Image (cartoon, rainbow, N blue to C red; front, top):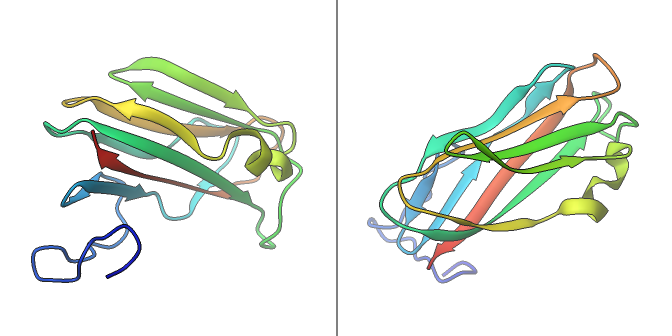
Length: 137
């Protein structure tokens, strides 16, 4: 069994990348894949939860076209039911892992979730990844 205790049987198969929430047994995850984020608000993850509350962690990574950290500043926002729950602004995305990874919060049932990003200092669409993972409460 992989870490976390989720088996590979037919009832618990890996579902692949998805911008929506994937639920397997008592766990959940979502992964944005690579998203080019220019100086425009860009959704990374967007979905509505089912009837299960989760304690989740969300993480973010920014890389430039060359595959290294970029010196651009980024804004990240978390919305639950169209209300802003948290906003983070990086001072050069190279420090992103020190500032806010992971962000942990309670995701209630029947909740619209949106995580989006914005390049504050440049128009280049650097690649941004967002993922979230959690466990039932």
